Length: 325
Ligand code: TYD
Image 1 (tube, protein in one colour):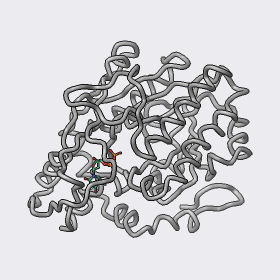
Image 2 (cartoon, helix red, strand yellow; image 1 turned 90 degrees about the horizontal axis):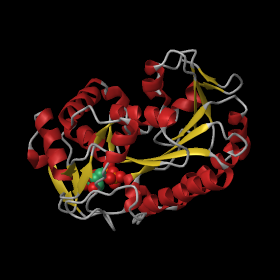
Image 3 (cartoon, protein in one colour; image 1 turned 180 degrees about the vertical axis):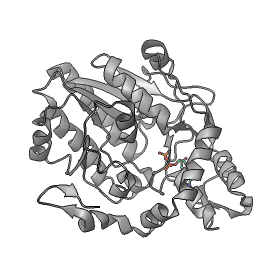
Image 4 (cartoon, protein in one colour; image 1 turned 120 degrees about the horizontal axis):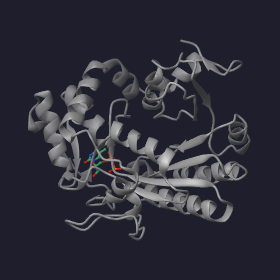
């Protein structure tokens, strides 16, 4: 949101968000009064609400709406099927009459499953999702491709590696570890901590989305990654080092069931065809991220206490459909 509002003066953004436990209007407080921005609380599986959105005269849709946390999908897959699969199909149905509206579908490297050592998946690799979350995202992708193929919906799929950034809900590895380390709480490492992820700083991903929005061909699929897979343990040790905390805070806990060992993507296609490349090094990105969480302890407290789940109720005016500050 912030990236697009800063990148272009002439842009107007409608943020359609159900505001689940991980959604927080406080995160967009600085743009809430920008006349080019508007938040509508709604459910992507509500066809009437989604149809209404398309009546607003949209040029493009960036489809981020999803349940995203693998551990939660292992506990209960149902919300993942509902939002990620049915929600995507609902959005695609609403998009059918509008072949000129570009739709960027935000997918994930997890659709490929675990990558063999030293290898990185290209876009042609078969999908082999291993967790309920990954299965829901792979299924959603098939619907996107089917609707592009069958009805001419102008869709593009981006499969990105793990993102890290300010404002990320502290259930994902990096913000959770920063939050725990800051409070001298134990840092839970699943299994041996040698699982590898390819971390991309959010600004690089936003630039990839912007480029795909404008330049990608209908029906195309692109991997987006920085191309370096790193073990979780290394990431956590870096966080401890930057925060000046001891490694003794690390606590090895039971592994995630079916834990994918390694994610790695080859992003040469988007680099070659659309001219995108990552610009932020992991070291710079992680420092920026840690600094942000340090400077925004109140945001983190609200996230951890679940307080901002009530923010919507406290600040939203249903009649005008706007937020009071
Ligand atoms: P996560 O941030 O949940 O992203 P994903 O599962 O989509 O890759 O986890 C990143 C990695 O960190 C993954 O290998 C699981 C591991 N992990 C831990 O070791 N401990 C934790 O508390 C969490 C949340 C993740």
